[in-house]
Length: 346
Image (tube, rainbow, N blue to C red; front, side):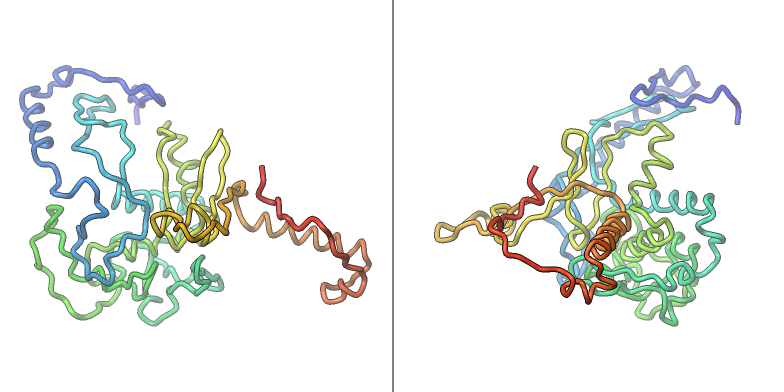
């Protein structure tokens, strides 16, 4: 790598004429025009269409959605922008670009010694760890079965894992024979397989298993993957701070940024927000019986739990209780008049 390579500083990406690099300007303009005229045949509001043609019982969208923008892109030569079209500053959903984020993060984990060898079974990295769904507290299907114990990191990264299980209400078979003709990847109904293959023996574009890759990587990193991506990749390269990485509805509460601070938003099932979100508003004959609160984002839950345990130990020490079981015998509990819980108040 030479020292004269151009790396654009954050917020200032230099543009140059294509001709200065010996690029045929006329040909470049035709390529840009082709991109503009061949927009993907998807609706602006993707919530209104089953673009993958999945079975109805599996087609529900469980992640954050927003209307997409129009055709946009840039052409880069030696680090400089030589052509651009559309709104390149717009924040849009990137869909399967998530696969690139994950592969980059696996590389980071490998560099940090968290993954010893990509040819080792993923099961070894989750053995003894428990991953549960936030809403149901049920265990997430892992890699302990006979089929899944053979899966390596390479299989996950190369989409040949043949992982067997269900994740976020979606079974792995939803990816079987996936019709990608609508996005220009293959012909309609060109796959007709009916049997599960051995890990590493069959490639097929998949999404469920990619999400399972993210969970496996979460076990390895021990912290939210967006935090790792920001610290290890996005900040060092001077990326914009407008990007976001959202989880699914089955995950934790919504992360909100306000005045430079982070909050997790939760709402009661009978709150105004819940009625507006799920029932179109509060009915005339009902009243709001719940609250919407924002809890300060505290990072790793492990730190909070350790803090709570420290407080419990101190309380037991103050009253001379050798265990939680004897705490009530060493204290006198009294009734209080202030019953309003102001824990979540500003």
